Image (tube, rainbow, N blue to C red; front, side, top):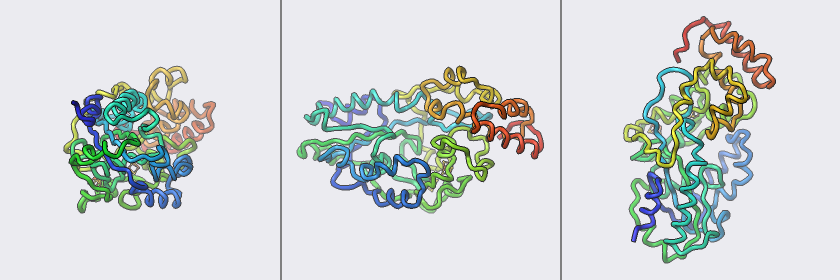
Length: 356
Ligand code: SF4
Ligand code: SF4
């Protein structure tokens, strides 16, 4: 009979492992300290369900197993010029494309463990579970100083999902006895003396190994943040129009990563082919058409134009001035203010080709 692990791998996941749940997550203390220091910025939902995040047994009563699953999303190559997008954004929204496989994984768990549908719940990056820390405990990798799960096989490029399970204790022994590749909970366990990610962060958003201050992080500022981007960070954003991968890209562990098999992902490389000028000229209709089914649609047109104005201001490209001038009359005050900032910055700096 196919093992449970193999059954889950056959659904298209790149890695699968299991961790025993016998108490709060190992990272519960760090989570509370991070929240207490306000490093979650405006992501208040993280604070609201912190208790559940800290203990999976508050999500599924009597939970004793956590299934950790990963999907490699390393794209083959990055376009050499133009605005830079977070790698994960160059696919259809992974929440949507991974969900059917997680539903199938639930059915496999029911079959193999003899449990009811009410005895398990899955999450992929949107629920009250610390996927990264459980993945480390399950042996899928270790948490680097860049606060990401680092896999020996896939480097930094993995979407993580978790299934919290209540199963008969006698069914767990075989699963949990399975060897793990690099079981380690400690932050930076296999980083050694490397500090490349801490040094490379342009906004100094990694104040300590494994700690991200979202208030300074370009990923937060350009995606989750609904308001203006604080001026002190705009220049450091450079040409990153949506998210930031710098602290992952510099990690030497990525030398082991392979291009994604994309079994549970749908690549959308055309997104990165839009020029900055085309993005700045997007209409609501065109925005909906280009970014449909992608994670980018969630920041809405005003959020993307806000980010594009920052990139334009940093570009040194005087040809963008007329487009930016038009945006100073945009319906959204957010866009108007960022367009005005970009114009001021462009007029202060020398004109030149967009090369960054
Ligand atoms: Fe810094 Fe970018 Fe990493 Fe955020 S994602 S911590 S801004 S390097
Ligand atoms: Fe660790 Fe270096 Fe990778 Fe940072 S860049 S996570 S310090 S190995």
